Length: 446
Image 1 (cartoon, one colour):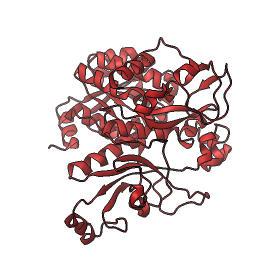
Image 2 (tube, rainbow, N blue to C red; image 1 turned 30 degrees about the vertical axis):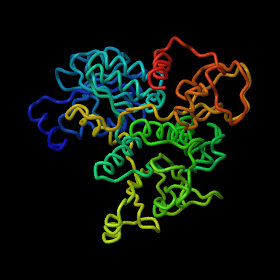
Image 3 (cartoon, rainbow, N blue to C red; image 1 turned 120 degrees about the vertical axis):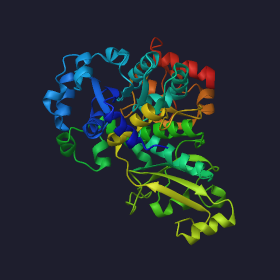
Image 4 (tube, one colour; image 1 turned 60 degrees about the horizontal axis):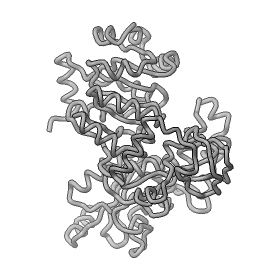
């Protein structure tokens, strides 16, 4: 197989670059933008953002010269190698010269529109907005396949990196016992709000303000919503099972991951083999665990024979006490700095870096506090709900409200703290494509 970098170099030599359109130039998008000028064979032809001026400021922040982003139109940018910045995402995804669309808005309902329109216009999609994948990824993947294009999770984000580790393990002949990511977790974080996030996160409000950090976005990580969303994406892409009552967040150092990610019958925390889980970097009493996996990803595999077990021992692989379970890990992920790998993979190999293949898991909106009739839900990371990972069969049976659609909807029934919300609890806007797609997915995959 020709390395992706060699393929990119060849496209550069032929003056035939992969032409990319980016929707959303915020923090994640800016990290990708920082790498584009250093990647041969790629032309970022256009950026669509609700605030083009802010997008241009981000381009300047990551080192782009002003003259490179002064193309008056997308056609002009395509003609002379510059980049057009505007607010018309439809023009971007409909332009016949664009090869790949990178959806980077972080807005799940809008992301569905962007993905579907890109498919309809023959564009591959790298979907950074994993929140959309979590509530309708299997059907997005199906629609992409029907259109003859590739739909992919984004490398650099943890789900794609976990999928890569799972694929490595299975391709080597190892059964996957568990796979997942790390996180900073204590149970009361589930009730965290944008007002309390920095204290739990480890920053002062002044530090957060100085860095321009979004408290709602960071809180979606802290309160468990984002780990549930990302675990859902992994389960739906790999077929791994999910815990029956939500993530357990067992505390463990990297050295202890193969010990805790075993079935309960063997001293671990798993209900069974073949599951997703998230490892906490904090002990139950709040103590920080040395050499943690907070920012990384991991996969635990099993030696099914004594010979393989002895190989682990002979080559110094760090295993659990039985010698049968081994964990491979990456301690860090580089977020948007790695998205170029997905762009190259979908454009030059026609291969996704993670893609939903079944509806195995779901993220259900769950009350952070007692909620009253008439309150308006503010989505992930807000004041009202957090996302709980559940098996899709369980979510479907209860009519669970997916977290990705728990934005700007009014409650019509009271909900107690800790209770999962259902469709019947809210006055849902049924006119969006995202709602229609989700309900169709329930019928097709349920």
